[in-house]
Length: 255
Image 1: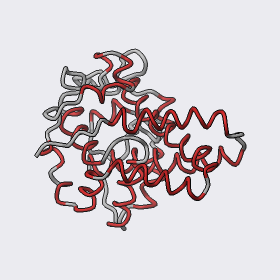
Image 2 (image 1 turned 90 degrees about the horizontal axis):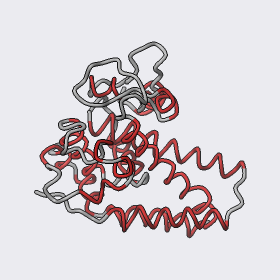
Image 3 (image 1 turned 60 degrees about the vertical axis):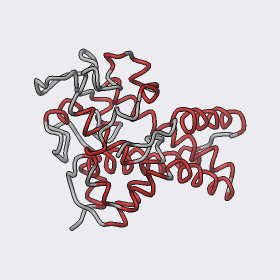
């Protein structure tokens, strides 16, 4: 089975950013907007990507309940990250297996702009081995989301817009863009030696970057993660705080 590619940049990334640019002209941003953006940022970047796509789906670092699993899949999708099946197959089968090698499409070695945003353009049908996500192939909801990812993504945005276009443009869309670029910044600065420091002598360029470690749900302790991928808490030193592991995961993990 090959992953069906959906021209993510053209169908999702560019249109969403155009909506964000529109919001800058039609929305008077207030404290209420900022709080709303922060709320959805926690859902999409925190629970969706850092906890869901990364710790739970990709590395199976903890267990949770079926309804929470479904919510994590949707939250991650709403950060413009593509379906969880795509993300996991690439993360397991390409990024960790070939980190900073020619196969790793978002390595900064291939160019900073590609690492940050344009690497999706280089994905081919044979780039990603779907066997890397074979556990997800058995989950009907995950597969449904994968096959309908654009409909789900734009359907949620349209639903919010019908309720309030101001909330959609002034809260939801900025939160999506912010969450999306959190992930892009990790792809870029988490793999540039000299930007951060290394606790482990891994065979890639992964580094720990303190600002991203604190602001991006522990994702910035990236060298630690590459050294121990399945470890739930990416912090190794006492001051390397992984907020996703210490704050968010305890709220949803199976007791």
